Amino acid sequence: METLTINASKAALTEAQFYDICRQNEGLRFEMTAQGDLIVMPPVGGLSGSRESDLNADVQIWNRRTGLGRVFSSSTVFQLPNGAKRSPDVAWVEQSRWDTLSREAQERFPPLAPDFVIELRSRTDDLAALQAKMQEYAENGVRLGWLINPQDQQVEIYQPGKDTEVRSLPTQLSGEEILPGFTLDLSPF
Image (cartoon, rainbow, N blue to C red):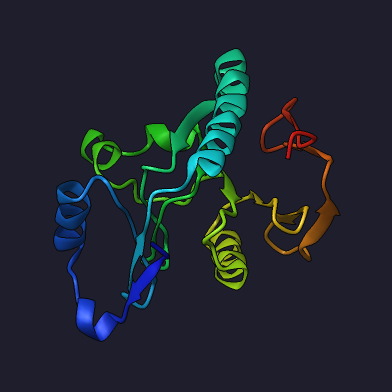
């Protein structure tokens, strides 16, 4: 199954309806664009799932050591300031920002952009759509984003107000001041 996008004029979902669809179909991942288009994403295959798990573990290990924030899996939907509802493969939110949310907001789809995201391109992902998603993250407050593209053996680095940096794999990435002391080694990709 490939990603399916349902036009906003056909979807026309309220926030509550979108939440209900996500809860009733936990085997699928859903996103919604700022224009209201519903995106249905299939489960990933074994290789992508393993890679995604490794990336999440790397960020989680760093975060447990530093205690600077919260790490989220691809099952988490974030409500971005532009109205889009997105699920990065790996996300991190600084603790002070997380603590400003009510308990209800934390339990549903957090109404904020993560500080850091990773998107891992799987075999069925359209590169242009992922690049647009990364740009949307940067425009909505994500301070650092990495688009890892094993198919083309490269990674794209997104930051607000900066040109996208493209590096060839294998490489090492720095969390810079957003994730101080975090380094991701992408030699296994």
